[in-house]
Image 1: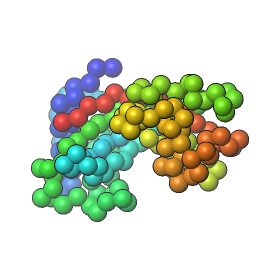
Image 2 (image 1 turned 135 degrees about the vertical axis):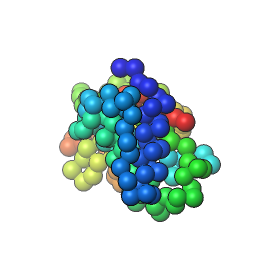
Image 3 (image 1 turned 30 degrees about the vertical axis):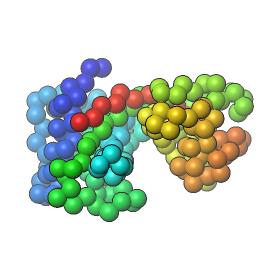
Image 4 (image 1 turned 120 degrees about the vertical axis):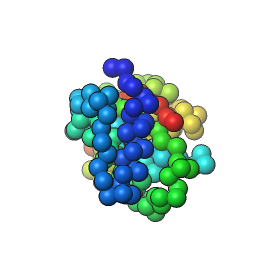
Amino acid sequence: MNYNKNALLRLARDSIRTKFLNEEPRLTDEQKKYRSPQGVFITLKKNGQLRGCIGFPYPIMPLNQAIIQASRAAAFEDPRFPSLAQTELSDIKIEISILTTPKEITGKKEELPNQIEIGKDGLIIKHPESSGLLLPQVFTEYNCTQEQALEMVCQKAGLNPKAWKDKDAKIFKFQAVIFEE
């Protein structure tokens, strides 16, 4: 699907701005077109540093609504950061990652790294103890190997870096269309 990146980035920014005003964003005709359910993550950066990142890995709601909710959650509900102050909004850069539906990587555990393409795939681990997700761009940013990517997603979930090898661990991969302000 082709995305009007500017319209979606405006929606993300407007979702945060209107939250300060205790209002709902008004969708433009262009933004109203994005009614198909899709997974999405919103990443906020301030001075190049992460300031919030929250989203929905699975297509559980229309994309336009997912962007509204994820933008507001990234700004005000990411437990790693204090809520965004209104004075910070002009310093924030917004990145949107629209996700494909995650698909489980199956096969022998030692062969899982061979099924991951760095620069293309994001990863999710589902483990009896925890779960975690890392977007594709994280692995590129850290110049990871496939095995390092698996270890990083385990660590994101608060697990031992080798937990991806556990028999009860399930690994999923997905791709993303990524754009930013």
